[in-house]
View 1 (cartoon, rainbow, N blue to C red):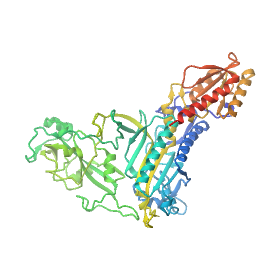
View 2 (view 1 turned 60 degrees about the vertical axis):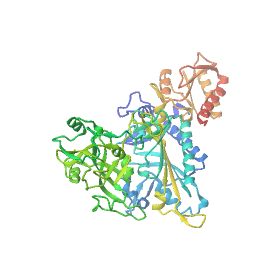
View 3 (view 1 turned 30 degrees about the vertical axis):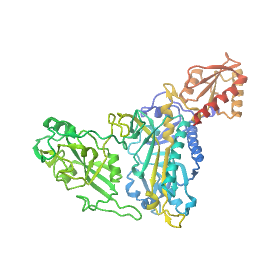
View 4 (view 1 turned 90 degrees about the horizontal axis):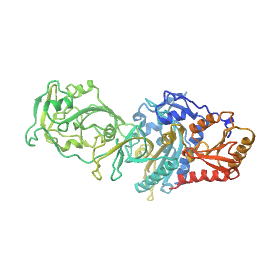
Length: 604
């Protein structure tokens, strides 16, 4: 490709809207443009790199025997009703109606589409395991799309789904995908951190995310320096803390008693007022859970809740309140809480709702005598002794409260937010943390979709069974942006050879005479050798050409200058030193350098 044929609208100024390096550089390098908030178009140069990332993903999926499909992006809403996610997916899912009033969904994910498609094709255990994938457009109506391609509304993902006759088969495939993901990101030049993760709205039992470190990451990673434990803080657990006691370490047989606390509501205020520490308090928070799939028929305070039973789907409650008890110095992890409650979303109740549920102003909730909603107790509370709690009455608290004696829990679970400084549950070392962005996520979905959508096969004994399912996603756009985040400097992008829009750029100091002849000859030779070459044939000053090439990040630059002929200057974008090579040897040398770089990145 010649630059005279290329649309390359580079920008000298940093766009004000761009906060992170990938957003700034992809805009400045003329590789993407924004059409609307969260909606981006790829320009030719950016699309070439996008396609290379896409092809790496495709090659590694094909290598493990995954079959590519191309389902539609707009799918019938009825299959989402079958799975139960029409109600639970939330406002992020774009629902539309066509001219005959049929409900449609602009796919945010494709578990329903693949299961609906394959349930009419798979009938025997002999067809399993079946590994399928798509690389397709998706849409999620993000409230706050930001950071360019990192969090946009429309994006491209590789979604893979596997169907199995046994959990053992799913486990094998789950490991196979994990290995393939590591190879994909290695070939893309990315350093990833695999972490245990929450399955969220996808459901299922096991889940692993592949993260890249980022200063503006959406995820907080909890890492152990000793044993390699790594988890998203939505999933991370920690070693139990020592038993914490109240201010006087009163014997456990002393009954709880009221203590007046006029105007004292917060943990900090209570700590000062009672001259104790936050670890002595049980903090009680009221949460509202949305679309909760637990059986609440016999739970306290849930007698009159609306219960919805969709066809072929688990029953759920559109809205339910819960009291969550946790040690005073800790925070509730809402992702863990949502998972424990099988809820699509949890949120702190409004002040009005808190007063209605507890009968007391905000700041005086407590578990003793509380019957208006189920009590969820964090594991930390069960290691407490001689505690202080709210008394469900304004300006009053209880002291000497003993968990298990003075109140009981409807559920005890780990709903604690783990932080740096907590200890590893495996080796007891002290955790540290990093910010990260998710590139890929693999799930063991189990039977969540095959049961609700009635996908059946005949086993060896002729009995009908539901296949067990896995789901495996990679964000292609986000992967591209992450490559730029990891590979750049003050002058621009530094593409790894495997995903660069071109392998080599030839820059003649002046495109005429002997320099034009030499540049054209090398261009044709490299093209015949299978090297992707960009020839800068513009009538621009050398400084402008060099600055543009540094910005767009072509990995290998060849300068053809009159002073050096019959030699050419070869320089890697990632290095500071250049070397001279006779032009008659340059073609073979450059092609070997290019393919050696690509091969090195692909080595396992």
